[in-house]
Image (tube, rainbow, N blue to C red):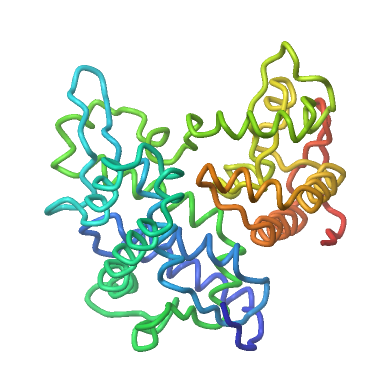
Length: 351
């Protein structure tokens, strides 16, 4: 992760960037879903590793590969719809996408992505294999429009060792991440649904969004067992006892805003608070409480939750939070104050 100095993009340049993204998604040629995954991956890494400046950003291919594995793991599991036999969604117009095959093979050895990540030697090998495909395929063809390459994200000649995002790209990815995620997910679902190799089943209009992109709750049971002790059996938000009541693991930075499972982002909330908070950011009061908890229990969170296979990087989680709350200020999002109360976060947000 290296930066080079550059001015932040003008409104006109930002609009041009969005138009390029739209052109790729509407007019680009797609023979697999890799391009969607690459756009989502570099956007998420720009949030995790970048800043709101006009600098270039250098991304390691293995970091990109890890995002690919996160995205494809769930989609490489057998899909069940009505009376049809479970099958693996076809992610390419020809043979099955090789990354799906790699992950499917991993799933024969490991029941969850968390278990695979715990096997360090295996995980590194898998990332290297996925990174090799990413470098050869979507990186080369993502910026191709009507037979011509428009290098507005990165330059191919500089992409052999790592992916060097051009100046101002990092800023735009961070500013428009929600739009990019939503557009990519929609086009990804459309590609899979309309793929003739899936059409026989998917013509029945099953809910692919839930299967392909919703968080996997079945991995969070052990996290809840850890948090119940860490939080002394109290709801993170209202402080009430969780004994003899329903509770859930909540993503403090909402999944809808940043769809990733990271150890420091988990909190335990009673059913009422979990439903009321929903997909809102919590107020600055809760943000401060969350940051203090993470600093105070950082080593415990790393030791316990990393053993479950989740990423546990305090700085990364807090950088994502910095980005999320700045977005909330700039776009005047509603934030949750607790109970049924909400407000527009319009004041200056300080780290």
